Image (cartoon, rainbow, N blue to C red; front, top):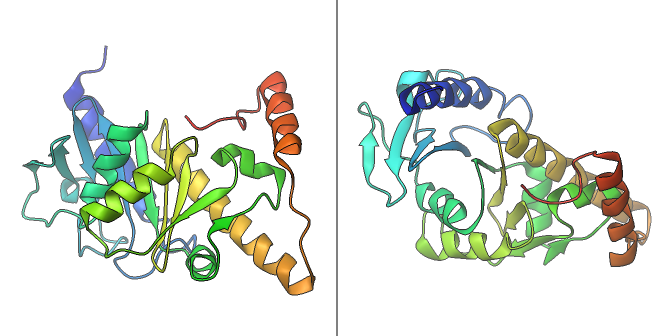
Amino acid sequence: METEAARLNDAKSSLALLGRSLIPDGLAIGFAGNLSVRVGDLVAITPSAVPYDEITPNDICVVGLDGEAVEANGRMLSSETPMHLAVYAATTAGAVVHTHSPEVVALSTVASELPAIHYAIVGLGGPVRVVPYVRFGSDSLAQGAAAALEGRSAAILQNHGAITYGASLEAAYQRARLLEWLARVYRLAQSLGTPRILSAEELEEVAAESRRRRYGLAAPS
């Protein structure tokens, strides 16, 4: 059986590797955004103020579920560590991804939720809620994000960005990409007219069929 130390090292490597995709994938700009992975009672999280194309496994910080730094190697903890920890406390997340993707940020300024513009939204649990604006790094933001994730695996942060989670880092990251795509589709649809939004009954039908086919779309994990 893999030891916790080995799992933590694997998590650091995965965070450093996937962190390099944030900017090319259009999910962040500059130093914005952060990723984390839970390993038992510890959380490995990308640091603050380190360019993503320069992050190495040695730069990854480690904190306890109580927020106490366990390992920092001279790096600053992410300002959004409280939000990541709040998500772990409120969900079964194995990993959390926080992004500043442009379509989502733009949507957050004009809408209270991202509606069911496409059936793929069942992979996020349904229409995505927008958390009212509060300052980054605050406990209020952390608690608001955790509350908005009830029954969902993604939430939008007003005038800020988004947060997604999954059983694995790859799952959480792909949900962040899906969320950005859905926000773009919604914007494009609105530019053409009044979008048709899928009903709760139609979404449940999709979820049921996804479960039958084992597509993995039906519920947050």
